[in-house]
Length: 552
Image 1 (tube, rainbow, N blue to C red):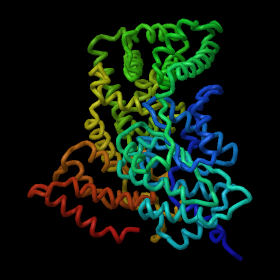
Image 2: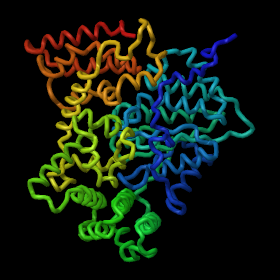
Image 3: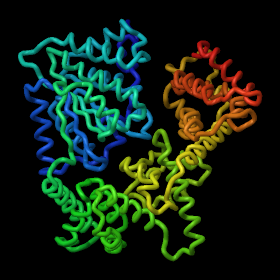
Image 4: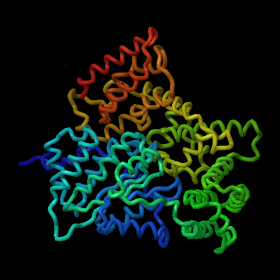
């Protein structure tokens, strides 16, 4: 009789970004387009996807906050409901595995294999059998062996069906070189004959992406620039959005059904300046406190000068309003400084995080009580997703807030500016402190030698290695690197390596992150300036690098 492992689906062994698909639980409260809005662009995407046009890629671009992701989610939902969504990958800066392209192809392959309408699963399995290390190969080899070749082997049906892949926020992929590689690989789906695979890509108009599409040539893709839609059409859509959400606020806050009136609705539409993120943030700001909704509306209207014409400046103004409104007016100047210092320190940590973590885990890393973190961000629900469950991750509603906080040209209140180098240094120091106090030999309490990480249940790892320790193990080196500080013998990094390097490697192994540990050591080696003072540290790193093949 066969045992259970013989029936196990090999696709389950492909690493994947669990929070990258459009309908991941991580994104369950992200908005979709309201009925009757974004009609022109959605119709254009549908016509391209289902038509005979030879271009296999549709590039939807636009300014930050113009609603690209909402359109991508809406299209993904539509095609998923129709059984025509092959896969989706929503990049997210600071989103861990969804912030880079390392798991892009394997995540797409897993979703392709799960798509019952596509006869491709058996061909992906066969390719994995032939190339057992494909998940650790280049993006080009992965794309060829896990996507193209399996799809080329699909049988042609009575009619060629269209399947869609949605790739959102490509600009939030951290590595420009990976972006360039992907934009060279994606057009190759045009080689497919028996399956019509279309790829919708959304992004900002950033230089590497513009360059990548130019290299593709015009025949491979269609373009649509979102902010080139006529202001009349965009403003009408924003008005519909505002009317819908303001009506919900009026009901929840026991206000008149006509609140806030046509004049205010018109003013808010004008203030949005074509940015859906302004309208969404404004509504969240008003909805957060029913007792202060009128005061907040007055603040929102009074602090937005009519002389402001740049859309981004309107968004920056509302971010400033929200942050300043979180500081009680009755506080003394000294008290306000203390509150703002703590606020900026906490926000700095949140925007510098390389993967989302909970308020509890963040508090452990920063050595700040969870209750104090929650009090500090209690009035920031309009710009931060703060779950009621403190073990669930915090995250920004929109990446434009991160950009605002670190740009002195946008954040005019310089006391709100974030020193990102300082934020990374704080997270690095906190991560090292957490690891030093929690990591130990045999951290997962295994009585027998030779137990493989793949055989140890995730629940055991979660129980033995806390979320804050897992985050620290995974990202402490990156935070050290991004802090801009030089390593030296005798510093906190050196002391940690001396005392806990084997404990860290063991923890990373249990977490299934041994390759990442090897890369982290290589990064540390690069950061170490070899002098008489740092020679011992450099030699230690070199020795660990030379020993990497013995890890399992």
